[in-house]
Length: 257
Image 1: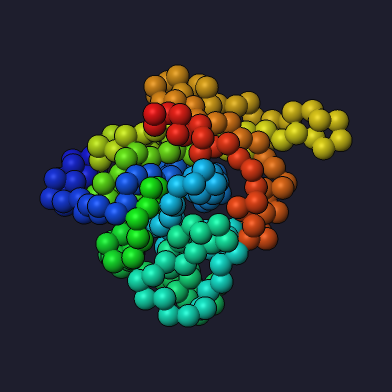
Image 2: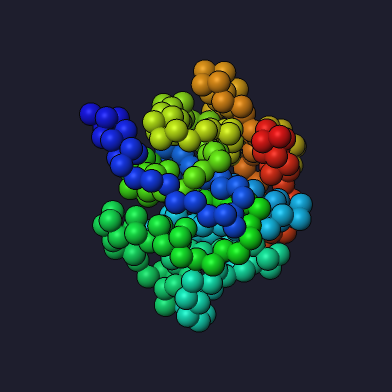
């Protein structure tokens, strides 16, 4: 029943194109807590370091974390439809940047959330962008549905983790992308393991890696397997995510080519 409804909704809503944005890539997952926002930030930072004009649309309206990762403060000024810019010049729009305080809750129902996401895509003056990355909230409900319905996505990157539930949850996200005719560009297994700082042993805290298994069973390329890294967590907390070196975007670029 849900699949039929999604198909009907997909047919009724026309995607809204923007000639000033060349590539739009969403980052999503079927579950929360797997690091979608950090993966979004790493991809955007990597693209910017390669010389591409880059932006981030934070579609996680009720649980945004992108601004803090880039050291951007809320309530700075009334920006209107102009995005904020990071240290490296990444253009960022997040509802949290428009609040008076970063811990103010956004208590909205689905239609308001969908409306905000649509405005971020259609009304924000992004300028000429080579890449716009969209950080999706977890699940397959209002916000991801709105993005897939109205934004002409080049594809989506699915983020997962090694827990036993990962395969089931990833398949939900993959089926949603398929139902909405959105290409899945690759899978990132985040928090795959930890390297002990003392003995350098590899510790699989959440169990054995499922990345290769998921890739083989779904036919989707495994983009990367990333460890738990204290330095990454510190950069996220300190608002200096752009200082963290990652080859994730280059790997995505290889797949796109």
